[in-house]
Length: 386
Figure 1 (tube, rainbow, N blue to C red):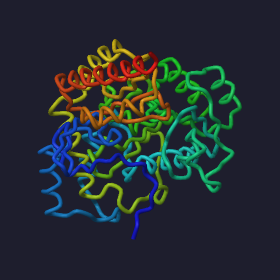
Figure 2: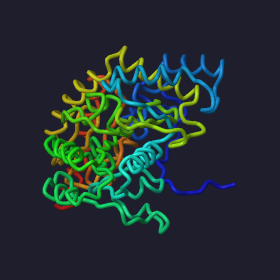
Figure 3: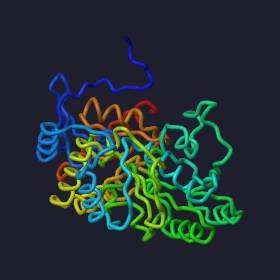
């Protein structure tokens, strides 16, 4: 049986990972500066992560949400303590798209409305409601089309105010930092206006932290840089370090009722063990501080390189915009320097999302190899033009 061929694949086959490196079937060692779409938060095959999962699978891997599961409570308590959202309520699911679906559904239940404000270049997932608030028609089939989402330009306060003043808005959804859109950060004042206008008009403020959360930005959630408090927060990716787990946080004013949401696999025993391991390592190894220190140093050095026109980001969520399309740059980094990097919807922006365990020496090596790659491309172009 063939696989349903929807993924453009790099021509490598990783079979082993260790911290910030992966090894392919030929034994080639790659520095991972992408973390499989920001999923690898605490490094590949972290010893504590492996230990937690092995111990849990030896006891009980799964039971559904029809029984008590103390691991869910432990995970919620640890998450609340580290994130600063102790009073919020946690619903566990399996993927970022599910987390967004649940956020939108609960917002609609709470307000009795259905119009959502989203933003240009946004990405919130590939399931139906999540696609409805994603600014890319390429991913939407006719069945996914809706007439209740309004897309506005990021950081355009006047347009936001005009739309939300109509009084029919259920929710405003925004990424803490836009990921696939090319690493664009909402202005802090714009985030504050979203919070203010949502409170004024009875809409809910949803912050999508699926890629930008879990310490990646140098704070637990990226929106904390702006000093705002969303009503609903979505998270996934780095939450399980490769194990499928996601979550949605709800403000205490949002009262749940039995049957409002549901998930067969969400919050299962093995997923919670993985989630707890991630939080324990983030806390014990002070990885949020590391993301801040290494990320700031990395961005400062990248900004001075040839062919680099802009460096955007916070912590270890970085976009490097280049004069040239990044396709050739990325392939040279992969095949000549053995470094994994990522793309975005902007063909000129390279996306960097390394594990939060990345060291300053490893970051410096990336800068050196990236500089060599850019210099080589620039020389080749000069020779061709002459």
